[in-house]
Amino acid sequence: MPLPPAPTKRAALLSPEAFRQNASIDIEQESAPGAARPEAPAVSSSRRKAPAKRAAAPASATTARSARTPGKTEIAEPMAPVAPVAPVAVPAPPQPRAAAAVAKAAGPAPKAKAKARAARGTGPKKMFVLDTNVLLHDPTSLFRFEEHDIFLPMIVLEELDAHKKGMTEVARNGRQVSRTLDALAAAESQDIALGLQLNATGQTAANGKLYFQTSPLNYTLPSSLPQGKADNQILGVVEALRQQFAPREVVLVSKDINMRVKARALGLDAEDYQNDKTLEDGDLLYSGMLALPADFWARAGKNVESWQSGSHTYYRVTSPLVAQMMINQFVFFEAPGEPSLYARVSEIRDKTAVLETLKDFGSQKNSVWGVNTRNREQNFAMNLLMDPEVDFVTLTGTAGTGKTLMALAAGLTQVLDERRYTEIIMTRATVSVGEDIGFLPGTEEEKMGPWMGALDDNLEFLAKGDGGNPGEWGRAATNELIRSRIKIKSMNFMRGRTFLNKYVIIDEAQNLTPKQMKTLITRAGPGTKIICMGNLAQIDTPYLTEGSSGLTYAVDRFKGWPHSGHITLARGERSRLADFASEVL
Image (cartoon, rainbow, N blue to C red; front, side, top):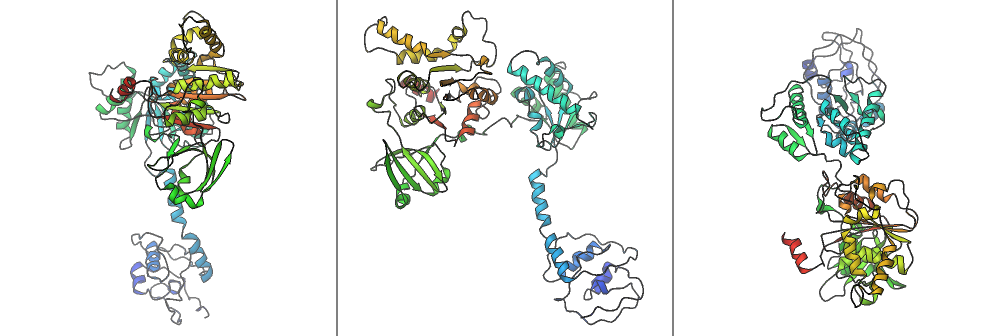
């Protein structure tokens, strides 16, 4: 159908009221009120096509028309009616196909934009006031708050300056924070009065700004709080910022529990620093083993392949349960009236896993340096300790579960009998982690002697003779041989070292920070095996919890690696008194 002839005078847009009265006529054929309108045959609504774009078209008219036109989807929210605008030239309407293509392309755009905004975070930007201990605990904490802003009180900078001297971990972190602040302030086009862009040095995850206290702030604290104390000054800054930036949320972030309690008592928002935590709950920590359900073989029985290789039997199973398995994870099947299965996952492909049966170290013929395992978890751990293909082993458990004894027994067997490693290196985190080991007399090993009581106790058990008194020459010679192959090292001097063909035991690893754990594990050279042991219920290092401990960090990051393994030892075997005390005390 040919287009109608052009109007004789310039077109004007209809008012919303007139549009509602003449909705049956295309808006392209409308002229100004009172103007002559060319006659044109009526067009059915099913054939009518709205143009993709109009010059200065009223939003309300467009919305109403899209809502009434069959086959159209409303993509714009209704707006209040607007007054008619001055007459403008109306461009030629686009072809129907072009209009449909434009509408189709523009359709999913709002959803995509909404998803992008949701990914970046659509909530209001907060302002976090950082306590000094947060910066000294994690020097990269400045870049962990995403799109939110950070405020540093002047007293925090003073405390950073006071902690920068020395060779301790805290001093190193303080110097790193100072270098980071200097790099941010020195970046181009940065005005410290207007806030420093946290992504100016390449940290793309931080999109907020860093503000310093550049002028005095007016605040009033209760007279019971000493005004000169640094913590109370920081609380005063938070109170002043809350009043200045209301209704914006101002939050204090501190690792000091008492600081957070005082802040909440004053009605201020306070939070712990959460970004250093690997897990929110210690119960979610990877245990290293998985119990197979009672109907596992009934469901997977038709899809099981088995074969023998050496002393091990292998099973290839296909089951939905494979999605929960990881390499070197132990699985066990225990059901009344059916044979038990204890195996390790050696291969995973899609929904198929290969299970390798274990060596039974609970049998007397498979004893390791005279030690036999007494429960299921200990047998799992010993299989990891004696496997030369496993380079990194982590053991967690309460007191008396046999962590140190099994690690030492496996180490002595592989050093003295199998000659797989040259010597055993043992270290542990002292209560003052990273500090100087003091002015105790003697060599490095003699200074570490007070911390190595657990080593002496276990060596006494492992080196005991079959009979005779303690002064028997054979027992003395055995002790001397064992001592010659065990070296006790302090963690303070580990940086820069490389261990070749060594069996390294890190005891009390729950008191290590993730950074210290990385420093120790990266010392491993070719042929070295590292064993980390600890009890996450006995953390003595300040500001460390079960979720932020270096041992938790290592367990979570190494799970599933083909050359690492982890086991959580559940049952104590020290004595009935120690087991009962662990449960009730």
